[in-house]
Length: 525
Image (cartoon, rainbow, N blue to C red; front, side):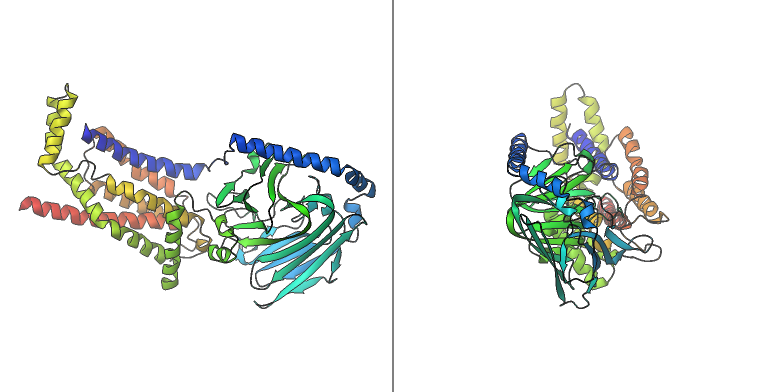
């Protein structure tokens, strides 16, 4: 019975690995489930907030419609360009909003600079509103200094620009401060004449459209250290986050834009009547300050800000392992100057602590294979008496000093490390555009000639043939298809991931060779 369990576990582990990888390729994690109580309280919060707004702002809203807060008020719109070594931003006096944002150090497949705001958003970034229409995003602001362009050339440079709107009853004053050495922008604004207001990231700010293998695209909310991904097509009713909010963001795989409030705020993600999904925070009237960040997901840069933005880099379930592995990978890159060699070295480093355990597991499997005929005899002899069969099997294991679970344990222990490193190689922007050698010029993309996946499949087949097995004929036939399945599965994988798996296979082959040789020598003696 125990050896059957061992065979089934090995097969289950292998098939589970296939299922998990297929899941990564064809599916993405579901949106976070809302607890009934939290959802109810959040909806009540929205209703009460909306009720207060409707009650206290009914006069204000009618006044807005009478005064015509619409694009016609922004006839004299001015655009101001901010140039820094890192990005080019375009601001508009219409709503004091951001209508353009282009990164200078990152490029798409056509060699064009990455764009995080294209210039004609349905709802511009940092538009203000007392309702879902963001009416104050349409009015014209006064700007100071009145200039067309501000250029920051040095890392120590900074510049501020102020936008002001007033209609006698309501006052909005917003000051942007830009820096020459960062993607961060400090924003301070004073809003009076309304009890509270909404501030939005707009319809597409932070989403570059450059895609990326298995990357989430859409809104993200951070509550404490709990990251909440939201799929835009799943948003049917408003999602409200009114406790422990750290920041709101819109992201794709490698880039994002975020608002980090310095005061307590409520966040909301909802679909407007026009069908677009918006992400916004609700702030009280008065003076508010927040950080705006629009740029790459560079973990170390984000961590230095000290506001939790580093959590935009999603290392997954095994993040407790992924973060130190990521740190080691960067140290190895600093040593080698090549992320391909850094991956190879990290794979070897991860393998070393498991060598004794893997040796024992492989030796155990080899011994199990040697006593397979005796195991079959016991099965046949006691097939009608399962208890007696199990007892005899245990006696056989004890006599030959075999641990039936010895072959599974090394695999079980390595799985968390595998998926942690898998996630690191999948999400790290450091691998984007990073060359290895010869035809592999971007470790974040698939091998253009499929050479690495094919070699990986061959090494997997060799490893399988060298590894002892106690599985029956039917199970062995199923296992023979795994190298083929994995090869096709890995055709679309980023080269960095395939390289990691290939090196792991080669190390397993080398180790299995020496184990087999040692056991063969012992058998002769």
